[in-house]
View 1 (cartoon, rainbow, N blue to C red):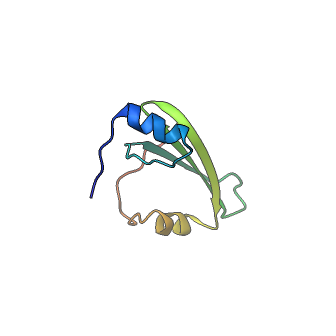
View 2: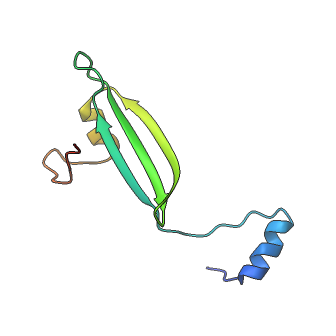
Length: 85
């Protein structure tokens, strides 16, 4: 069941230290790079934005590109990649 409240009502609840939640539609831009040619380690950086404003950056290392594909549920032949210059 979804509850709907006005912004004034939510503001009052927040002022009373209540936790409120809402759904938004963020954009996640994920970049992948192998920082050293002698290592298989892949660095993945996820930049989370809401309405064009960056709200967080998370960086994580994976053991290989296969681990990245598995973690993000990307098929071997998926055509979702863009090469950045």
